[in-house]
View: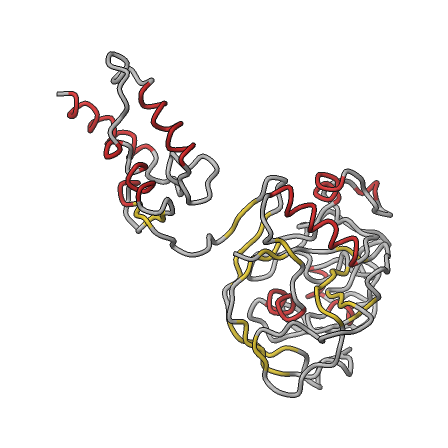
Length: 333
């Protein structure tokens, strides 16, 4: 009789949470059921009136498979069934998106190949944008926005931004590459991981293009200066529409991968030393082996349209700071 009641409760529970992506025992939603989470879930069931008369532990096979998952490597994924009883042990691969404890959101960028650089016919191109084939064999997460002033303050306790009055949702700026590294170190400590980092230049351009081959992710370039370029105006803040200041992130149209402000608002530091592109096709490039300046990408609120193109390269010394340079993080799965 008792088992019949429990199974009935289980059926109701599973139907009620059928649309949930995470197992109900997985309170921190990382697709892993830790022992502490299992114990908490077990205790909650023990406190249910169904069990209060005995106070005994709930058999693991009655825990919507939390116990089974715990005993089989702790990792799990949804096998595609309609109810949580279909969750099975094992790693289904990286989640399509994630959010950390300070509200930074990331989307997973699948590995692939693309043509890095710009064609000779693209208006405003630079001589250092020689086209070459790049293959990225490993997927990675890319932050959906530039690091905001609020996020920087949550980690570092202060705000270096020249445009501080713009607010917590505006991009942090006036930070050097060296200071960006200090932020990453502090964030990794705060999140108890070592996975946050700056993207490589190849990862940055791959993410910015989001499958496109044009100057901007949504099409070609029609103006190289500060005059209105319809495509850039839709996707980013530059000298033609920014009114000499930064703007809150994610106000313009995102690219096909859900990334905002890849064109304009603030330049973004990359991890690489600046150097000439290779003449041949490359796999998982990490930039020059050594150098004196680090790469920045994307253009800013003060840039002309040609400097906001997906292929545009720029560089400064690691200690250089400016009110038009910020950062966007990537994360290793």
